Length: 299
Image (cartoon, rainbow, N blue to C red; front, side, top):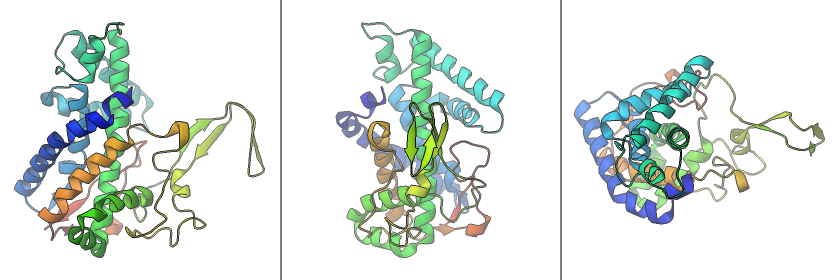
């Protein structure tokens, strides 16, 4: 279903309004004045606003949706996570059922589909897209900002040649959270459907296989100086969005959001710098998606 809202045609339509959203958020960042938390003022609200707009969620309900998705991401409190999911599913289902979702958004398109879609199903589809379509992008935006702030030569290279921005986005996606206290490992839990042999290890049907894409993205046999953020590297392909049949359908949307944001951020705030030491930064230990708790910046 996510393919529907991230089709090439839909992304082309989105770019203009996305640029407007970015401008608004950067205006608010500037108005807040330094020091400011880049995560709270930019990295979190932008993907939230985008996915809500695509679904047709009224802008006045953005804060409510943010609370629901933060609860869902809770890795320590299973009850809170389940309650957050149930609340979001119910909210989105009722939004469509009562005709209060924005016309043209996915919720109303599902509601008006000739084959008929149950309100609860609409709620589940919407909740899945809202969580997967924005939470991971929040994380990626925060880490890209950190990499550019801690590698001013790379940021200056993008400022001098905006065509390098695409490579900068891909490199930020590859490098990820290197250098930040994450409090744990990364991995995508999957379960074997048939018996496998992986590098001499026998995996039986039903057994858990934890796929650490972060480790793959820093494989020294593939990447030269794998932990260095380098937008000019020729070996920048990565597995952040998965591969093959498991490739994330929301990848084009995430890339578009990151490109739109940093295309404005870099020239508008050329003197932006960290307002804290890197060693002081922390990632969420309590959320399944991780991500920076805060990114204090000044300019």
